[in-house]
Length: 273
Image (cartoon, rainbow, N blue to C red; front, side, top):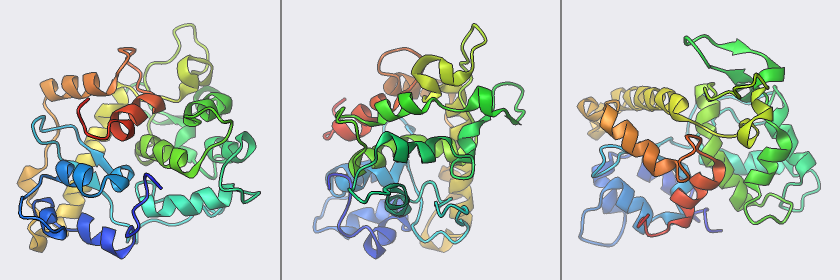
């Protein structure tokens, strides 16, 4: 598949658990490559397994989570809590694919979208003052809108490749247990507003930046002997935040959709914009 490496198991773990400046050693070539160049030119099929921080602007750093995470468990429904572990997404897809036709219909997909025991973070909102509150009526996504957005080729089903695009877009939300701040001005539930609540905004991105830094620090501290340097980990400055949002928000709506994420990360194969 377009977004699935044949060596996604042990060989992929080799790459993402090594200090990024050494990644160029994993292919036959003499030229050293940055992390983002390595993924784009050598392992483009694994773009869904890494998340670009978007900064530093000249050479963005990447966040990658090892498939061998031992701190994540399973929900009672069998779905992985290792939201950033791309090697676990196929198993989640198979659990949803009740009729085993290698695609998801709206009914199969809804289980992951709306069931609290499967994706509890989607039922949380983090709007004001940093307070985490739960209200399923106000914060739940609109399943039909989500399904339509994830169904990129509009064939009324979700393929495995569309599933990987969706998981790459939405997994940071699951990890962060946060929601967008742009609620409908007329008091409607978030799910009844634009994009059915299925978007991320600048407010959420600030939370995600903090979480990415924390995850990097945790990993770097435990892997100092491999050459990871904590001094390189930082949050973006204000100018970088503005540039990142401009790059992600293709239509200028201040809401980043699954489609915008697809066009920026997956459709733009050569990274030319």
